[in-house]
Length: 490
Length: 67
Figure 1 (tube, rainbow over the protein chains, first blue to last red):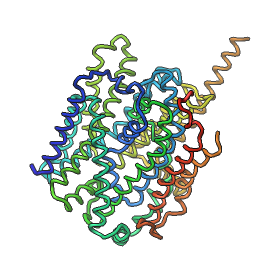
Figure 2: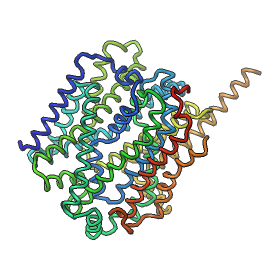
Figure 3: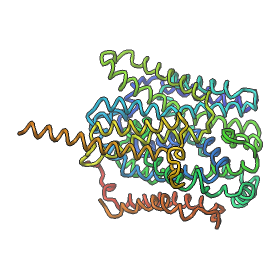
């Protein structure tokens, strides 16, 4: 073992210890933690929301995308900014409704808004399905992190298993209490690591940012602008639009949103969150510097760019610090995702199917869900050959399908019926899943159409079908319901 | 609906529509290629705009929100 590995394993032990310590003395129920008595102030909600947004994907996936595709990666800073703005108008009504009805999860929100427990169950399943590629992404990142920092001693396959076991042990031991502690440590680490790498690396190798960009552009012509075909302007705009639209749709965001003390918290957040997005800019600098300094990483190997460049530049102990940051940036969001998926499956799906079984053994069932979900995601992570950015895009295409029904439910007079919401989401998610598994592209579906249509993000196509079905079905079911009422009165 | 809420649309217009007109590398601003500078600029502007809206919106002046 080299010093980098020691530091990473040390960080793992410390975070486990923090979890055990956080647990001692306060045996809160999951719900109590989840909404924290609805007393979280601006700063805390900001840190949690930001902490859920900035994961190891920010380090490895973002730099990898800049390394492989250049300007295409700019979509990340663009959608984060726009998504953050929506919090000013979107989150206060969500929070208000959740407070009024004492809600703790996203699936309950849908169930109560549309007065349909079945919709709640369905939203849980969609949320979990959307989280799967994200969790796969985290396991893959863990594999990349451990195998790279072991300087080749540990194979990616073994590394993915190690990562999965670390995450499951972390969730089991520390539960969700540990995350709150580790989250703060992680936020500071990731902030300083990104800032340092983003400034030091380009300046060290090229003297200035501009000179770095000029060298990159000379080495790979056109990489600093969007291409004419493929991930073109039309792909870029459609991807930014759906990602911003679905920004707050994650199941693990809901408890944090519900935890706020007042609605003003979200309005302050709308000012602070865009500034946080500037971090992404510095990650781009790392990815672009790597283009010239560690050339030759193709396809999924592009996700190694940040680590390879760091290993070339720094002593192993500093690579260890970066690795430890990456580890925490996996454990915190990973545990939040696994926990919220498992809690929702236990409460809203298992609890719905076996209403009498709820109670004493629900914690055990939740833990079983954590293990099953982790195993499924590990298997998928082992057998899969996509870049981290591709997994991230799939996750977003899926979760965005919840947005139309949610946005409509916040209107004063919601014209959407539960049947409309259900079928809209069903078709939207169905299209994304079908296209993902059969590897169908927009260009295949719309061969012969103008180039800009062929380049659209597949999530947009699914979203259009989703909205169309939702409106049409709502129109028909509403009419049927009205007709029924009329006959009852006459 | 308050008129100044429309300010919040500016970043959306700039990024979802404006990007089509700024897909180029030059001129460099603050050492950034122009397309990247565009997003950097609008990230800062988004924060500024949201701050202006926050200050104008009387809802944020109420001590306890009674909504």
